[in-house]
Length: 152
Length: 152
Length: 152
Image (cartoon, rainbow over all chains, first blue to last red; front, side, top):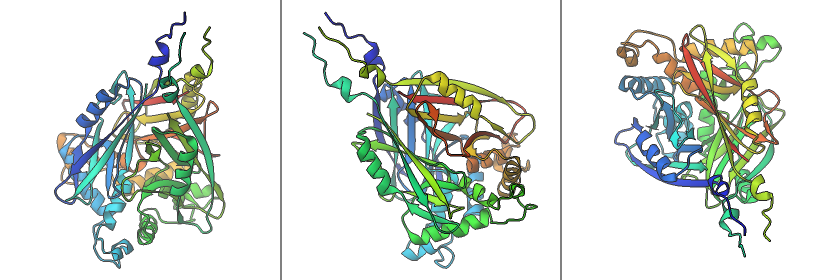
């Protein structure tokens, strides 16, 4: 008689996909995604693996930093200095398309599109202050964030 | 009689590796990699997983943004403002090595080295405007991009 | 009689986790992590997969660039230009918390939190000059870097 031993099942690969919808009023804002991503990890059943969190839009970011309002204010001021809003199509050629959001495409490059977080013993393997944020740079409409988990 | 059921095979891990060669004339340019990465995903047979796309060179980037020529023009102007070309070894110490490309190493940090994209139901799980680009900041020679896919 | 064939075992997923401790004297510095990450890959036994390396702290970075001292000097000067140190809480609101490291949170966004590197045939699949660095922007205390490997 053949008995199929559990390690085959323990080691098998799992994946999990969830889409979060963001609806940020105003042009720029930062939203803490951490509780929602933790819930995805729990639902996935993955104990050891990787968790990708990315914005699906090109005028927004997903990044990891501090959950501190003063710092978020500083991010806003700083990004406006590095990549200022300017609807003038002579300043940003992208705005010749009829858009006025060229600056948001640049700001997103500074802050990044995605984070990849380790999952260890069934939890996001975070340092003491790490939190996942959605950064909106051209808001006032619905956008999506993708959470993809693979592991065992 | 023991029958080995298909889930064991369905859930097994697969990986796929491909190297794309870039040959960009001129110092700075952006090349859309999306069709070639989609072809890699198709060849990998992976239905659920992660796709890493990274430049293998440190004066180039792989990033996701809009397939719009005006925006690419804006990226070029903006990067030149944030990290201007200057061959003077008193301005950039890296150029004391005999290179003149210190600015390209800095530009690449703004735009990033890699992207990780979810694969769902056998396809790159993209938002409406997401496209993968190779960003060259010190061209006129052959460079490589790595596509690595893992999943089930 | 049923014989369980080896492909089931060859294809099974593995994971590996290691924490590296960094202790950088001084405020800003760059440390080459490559040999320690290569050792993790060797210990993991993974032949085909992905290797995530991330700082667990929000005033530090992990990034890939050149192992060249002149360039590291240039990174320091450049980051100080883009996100200057300033303890004044009127300049950076984050410094109203009693911290003086707002600039380090900004510098880290430029340089990034993490890298994901392909593992091919049991080795980090690197281009000719790629090396992994830890970037410290608020040092003089112990911090950790996470190495997470998944694959087969």
